[in-house]
Length: 578
Image 1 (cartoon, rainbow, N blue to C red):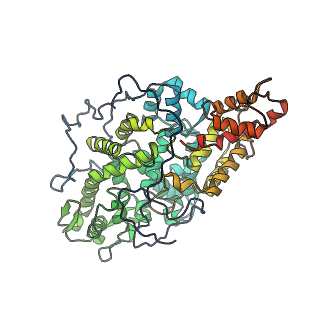
Image 2: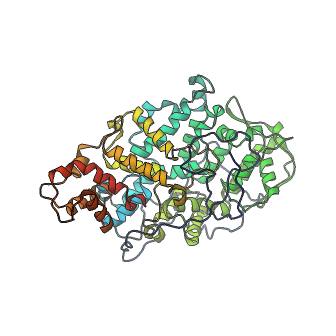
Image 3: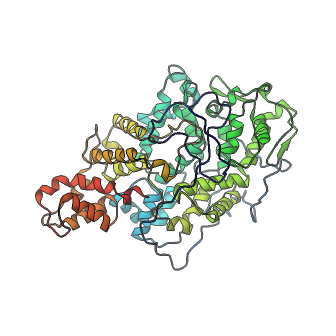
């Protein structure tokens, strides 16, 4: 795999080193002397497709992310410091292996727009995975703010978990359970079940916003399950205990968990780092991808970072601290300095260093930008990133607090139609809209769908390099890939899968009524599929396809084309843009 050059633009979004239309899923190189990332040119943002949402008479700000009932909360957090924490006053982790629960913002969210049909459509398109009239009904029933609060509640269990535990038991294995149960270190069961259960949650799960957040951080701290045989006993545990466990918690805890997990030690080669031969892969990516971002550090600081983290290895597929492999000597990274003279203190040194990086203002910007790029636009404003970063720092790196602030921002609600659906989100939206549920299918169909999205370059957790999938429009606009999506729209709506087939309710909803005009029918199908009235462009496309004028009465023979009409609307820019 070619090594891309670096572009000195620390504010850019990481770009893949291969195009999504290429085959996806190859293993990343096992020995790398440098990072596999480069900066990406800023993409042109898609244009909004809807008018501005009506504002509440008095726009509200998000609730104070500090919980006044939490004894750990400071009496007056004040303005977040712009200076990194010094080792003389470090931010100590409570226990990296068992992090304390994060302080929570108040459950009562406040948003700056009225609870209208268009606001609900925007929320569903941007933050959810489902589309169409049925999904909108759920938000309408709960209320806009209540639905968001429910989605951000970390105590809620996904309704499909019992089925997933039955279908994918290896994806719930601890490392010890994997070693006891799997045949050998070449058994791919845990890896494949972790990948496929992740897709199943995106297709059928009830925690739509949570799954989006999980995807953001799975790509930030990327550990692909298909990396190689040495991952098979630890990969399921990594994605469950590192990513999913902390996706609505503190980012500092997520970093600590990753820094003590064998899967990360394997994928970024820290298991091979020794005092005599320090491997710089993890030390570099910890800075570039996981925390402060490219351009915030020097090569000398990469060396110090790698020395600090040396000695963290694996033994018998478990994390192992080996002081004899910890490189000694003075270290200095972004204001964190230490004599580093005692190898037995090296593990604690690394914990203090991780805490320092997690609370660094540049890390706050990195996390804020990644969430804003996923939920707001490919090019979020500097003001929004700064506001979210302030919340991150003021709440001790609480990801949920950042999301509360994001949903309370004007920029989120103004950014209509400015994001592009990635292939997995595209097909998951169709699957949910046509009424497919996990109890109406089987594990073979999910496996088939996994390889479908893999062929489109977007299968969950299959990106090989450490920088994770790209999350900007220009990475997903290949003509062949878009045409492939269109083919799958028709396949799904026609029921041309192993078990996937539209529900009777969906089919009845897109069936024209006796004496109905083509324009009225097109509007009916648009409301069912896209959750919105037909617009002039889509109306022209549907009537041209039918060979009818908008006011012409639909004939019985046209009812046989209902699946094609629905697929045509899923092909439209109104669906492709979120």
